[in-house]
Length: 272
Image 1 (cartoon, rainbow, N blue to C red):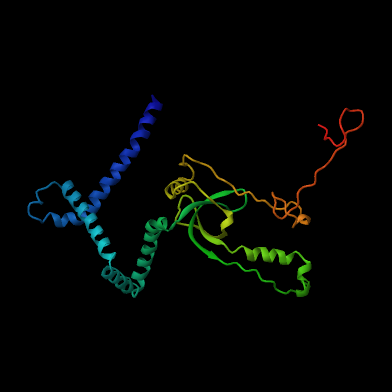
Image 2 (cartoon, one colour; image 1 turned 90 degrees about the horizontal axis):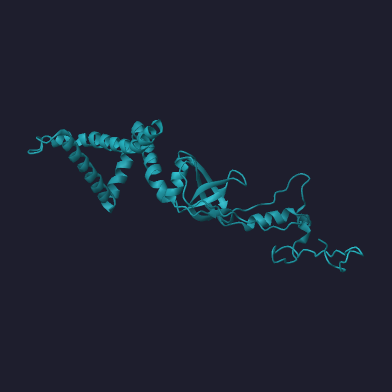
């Protein structure tokens, strides 16, 4: 009996909370214009909940009309003038700036995301959901600086240090990735990362945000991470010989084992 009661509570609680929140919004927001609506002839005799609903719908329509106006040239000029006016007052400027940033974080951050990716962060072996925000590449340049007891410029070719610098200079396809934190995805980490080190995720932005906000309680149906296979040369001395598996490495040597005599095995055959 207790188990069935809890099951029924779990089933009805989300519906009840949804209706309660909608009712709260309709009554509170609708009452903003509800006071004025009561003075309109023919509407004053309506019940208070109906007046609140009319006021709520009127506010929704008003917000829509403001959006239409501010989308045009004249509306944008008016909006810019209002922002300039608010910025001239110290207290008003602080409140308006904070409200503007909060609005951008809630409504504009999602539209700024290009696609969902996986990144090995904060270290290799740990996979984190991120969002590609911009594919405008950053150029990373490594410079050789002289230091006491360091490498002489004319001897750079005799060391491995120039190779590392050349490899770093070759990685210029670096993209912008935002790593959100859970459960608040409006904060996080901004990474400039080589494009070759990000893994495309078969997740929509909505699925990724639901997973992050729930802290992994809600996960997508398809959960697959295709990792990056690093094909590096296992031996630093083998560079430049052209192995198909490792372009910079030679083909591995084939060992030939001679079977001991009297075992019935032919010369050159590898024993089991």
